[in-house]
Length: 373
Ligand SMILES: [Zn+2]
Ligand SMILES: [Zn+2]
Image 1 (cartoon, helix red, strand yellow):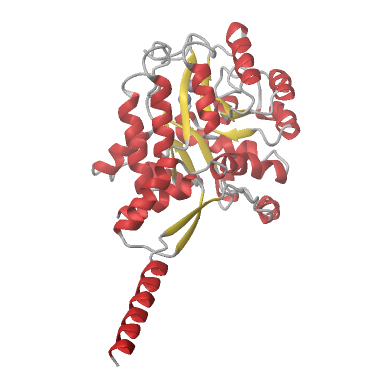
Image 2 (cartoon, rainbow, N blue to C red):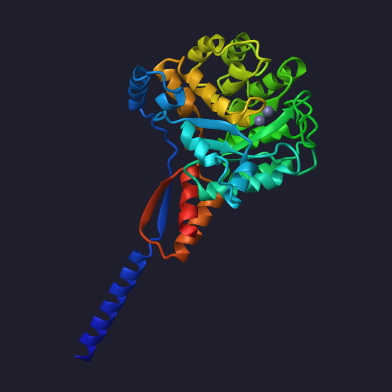
């Protein structure tokens, strides 16, 4: 009798251990960086275009997703969020009105004050992950100032974009920023190009003037770092369609941030939007739209000009330029070691078990935000 009881007790003990062990499988995190193009949107675009009856173009194309890949207004955004500003239209209201679905948001560039605006960009990304892609630009480019380590740290944390980095500047109003480069291959820039390539994160470069020595060093960067995703900030500003032809024929790791507002509304522009249409149609995978916060023309004109360009493109090209080209660069970024560890920590704290997550970098961020709440 006694023996039977012992056997039963041992049996129960083993079963208990098995249950505990199997219940303690923890979580599984799978890297998933595939990007599926939304095919139906082309047809929808055609329908939107057919429905034009003289209303503003941002209304005609309101249902077309649009990404602004170049916006400095994080400080203004912060002001709108933290004070009672009922008398002016908030940044979010403008996005809503103009149908801007996502904005690559940052603030100051290539100087110490950018460190603070980079933090703000992260803070508001946490609050509005459906509206904002966080970018950072507070990086010293001189050797010996830990610029490369800083880039790595920010990318590990979860930032999805680098820039706007002042790789060279002579004529811009911000030409005297302390951390600008001498040219696009100066200081630690080549090392930074390698790090961003490891993370598959795009880097947006300001290059002015976009000619001469600056452009030959930019070409060197594009040639020597074929895995790096370069975005040429406001690439159409003081650049001809012919110049794009030459650059894009040589480099498929080059993306053009097209500042339509400059071409359409700034009197200094030598070209019209229609002059750029053939080259955009020829390289439809490499153009994206940036507002540059409406510098010199105002943000609303900058948004309007985006639609004036979109309206002149074929449906397949329009949807790529409006959002798919940049969205792909976001979706294809893998999650980082830091993110993975953080998710595991949080899952343990919250005793989440037997769960499988398929994530890329931005989804990992969103999961971290959710689990931290
Ligand atoms: Zn710039
Ligand atoms: Zn800018």
